[in-house]
Image (cartoon, rainbow, N blue to C red; front, side, top):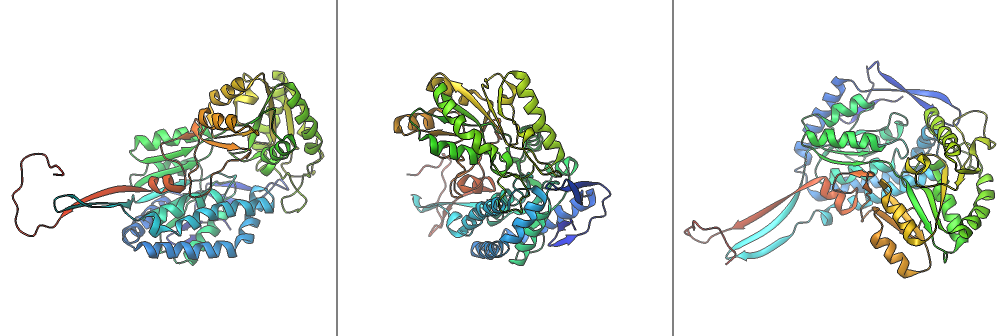
Length: 493
């Protein structure tokens, strides 16, 4: 049963507002998710507020111990968590497990709370004066997470928020909400005090109530650009700290000197893994000239046509279902649109052999795409790859840099000078060199540019901790005897 999770306990909702939770592999509605009522929202806020009062003064080693326990329980329950994700999202079990492990990396980072939160100290900055800085929690933080990574992205958020001394309210996607409840169960089993993490199910109404609530101090969001911009503007207007991650159109540039076999294999996995439902999926390949494009298509076409399509529970499956019927209809719409715009549909996923039930579609490949086409400009969020042919490197670089999205990009080359130039000049937040999906490790930070991110601080790593805390600087003096005080501005002399 899908519930709310308030003040340390699963709470059966009395709300009459609900949404469907599909089994994407069969197309059937397997459960309904209750949307939190205004009363439940207030209960969660009050529980978080009370938890913050005590948790913010809890010792840092104690917070680290909670994360160590949480990490162990996540590892112990990894298979169960992955099965929940596969059942409601549709991704393969192995992909679900891999995503949880990427979330675990941030939990492991949070285990180092004593090192992450240690202060800077300067002795004798002036006669008898010492100066030091500390980081303290903000209060109640809210995380709004998307359907495509129901465990990984929450784990990118609240472990760092909690070790910084905050309380947290998680609003998961209503499309696959069960993983959020198991995560909360495990955190409380690890020893979290009541109210430290609350989970509220819901839709836009619940989101708007949370991001405008006067007791909420910070909001982190991952989802579509339109919603990210709305949340950023709304929460900023309320005086809150905000990071809002939006859509993407990630490019991969293949240089003439690249290892084409390696590049083709990497692109196949990066474009069609998780059925293209990744904000870091490669959805555009730019080749320099026609020869590379033709050679790439020769390799990709049979490989795409032979991808095994089926349920995520089947170990042979490489291409699972899309998450909802609406997303399936959207992908089909863009395939038809691309043909109308004049792109050449090399592989048509609508014609693939797919299971009779469920939200399945085969992988698709467009060639002869131009920068003015909507299938290039807009995020499709499905198993669709576009090939553009650039006359030279500078043109290719300009296409990547001028695109309105700036989440991730990659280049395949053996030329170190070109790789360095690309990394320095491209106007994108995350860059891979011979790596198609450049998601940084946990002790660096994740974040895009332009319309892929609204806000100044990236997720996890040093910037994630900075987002969930605020700096306080203390100057202290302990005089041995009474001293006179000057009316002049203090100096360090």
